[in-house]
Image (cartoon, rainbow, N blue to C red; front, side, top):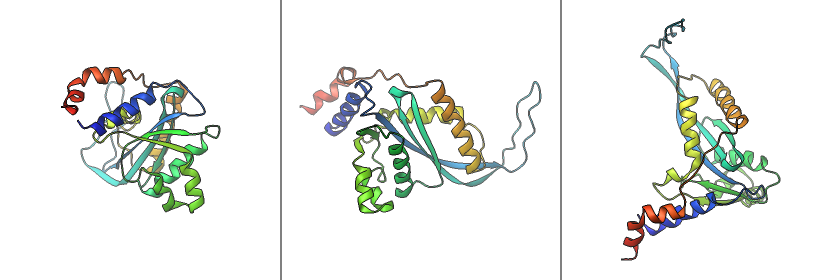
Amino acid sequence: MTGDFIWRMEDILELYEQPYDPKRPVICFDERPSQLIGDAIVPIPIKPGSSKKEHYEYIRNGTYCIFLAFEPLACKRIICVREQRTMVDYTDFMKILSDSYPEAETIVLVQDNLNTHTAGSFYKALNPEDAFNLAKRFEYHYTPKKGSWLNMAEIELSALSKQCLDRRIASIKTLAYEVGAWERERNSIGATVRWRFNKDNARQKLRRHYINLQN
């Protein structure tokens, strides 16, 4: 464990300890690429007392990417389904995120180090002035390499996978409908993540790593 890892970890943990501030919402962002899977043979419908029967053969219908932003203190998530995960797709989602917080002075963004996850991507999709203005809306905080577990958006994507993506979905249209329904349900019930790991926990449980850096 390096000093850079510890610094980035403590930076994220410090953010998670801050009180709710609508002017500076702390939002976690992550994305999940996967495949669209269709049935090669029409499944046997569910009958009382028996489960759905699916044939082992399936059809690959291309890929998709789910972009997810999660504000834990507001119990709010914003999700978008895209066919790709390019700089332009990232920019489009960040525009949606920015427009969703018109009253925020700064959107404090937690994300990983994927090469598209930078304000530099905005210049691929927008003119320089619009790209610069969009970039100024965000304050970036990056999780350390191999430290994606520090991003609460990853927990939400895991819940999405278990509760919504646990079946064959053949088209982008169907996927967007199902994911949208999941998003609305999670937001309506106020589902969130109760984060309990803080800097004190880290300094105690990872004490040997802190000591090793000083030797």
